[in-house]
Image (cartoon, rainbow, N blue to C red; front, side, top):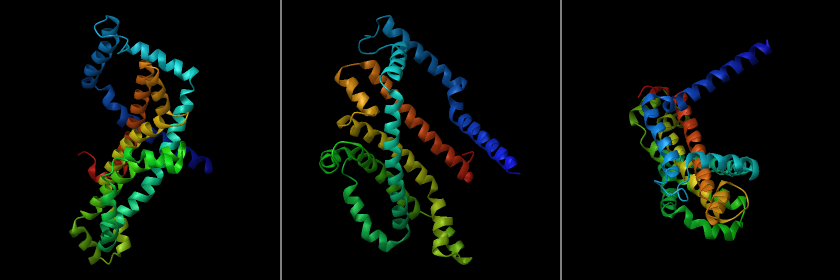
Length: 275
């Protein structure tokens, strides 16, 4: 019987995985997009080779690909990626675990909002990179500094989008729930949260982008590991193909994480399917 459940679970996992890649990669293999992508890749390859563009400043696609393989085998690229991802996920988890409950409570309760909202409104306009000097003083150079800087970048978009989504909950839904005897806790779980779900997912996407920006800034300032460190090193020695490899990896990471969030939204926010 357990084998049957395991088989069903594995089959379900494969179905979901296939659905994710179909949804995420489908646009890349559409005829419309390929008519744009293939000419761009050909131009990237041949314009520097034909000396129309300076290859010292814009290396060809094949040169960047060769550098990628060199970094993979000789510069511990995978290890650098894993270190950066570990820092990013730690910061993302902490920021989301704090920002969503605080935003939910601020949007739900006027008294809580009156106490804490002005504080966040005072702190949030400070650009996250401005925290770098003080963060170095308090945490030193290392993973704690990187995680805190990414936390700052992720926290505020998630906090304010969650707050706004909760605050804008349609009063008719709340009145209907109260008519049927729903408690405030039930309304929080069943009405407020799901009404704000789209806003929360959008804030997480913004948080991914801001977190990667702060990852790059933090790792450029200190440490000996991470994609930001590799990019900073390539910049110092003017190795443009390595810069492009690091930029592409950051872009792939951001794209992949955002596609995961989009798929989660598709699976959970069923009322939005087809929009």
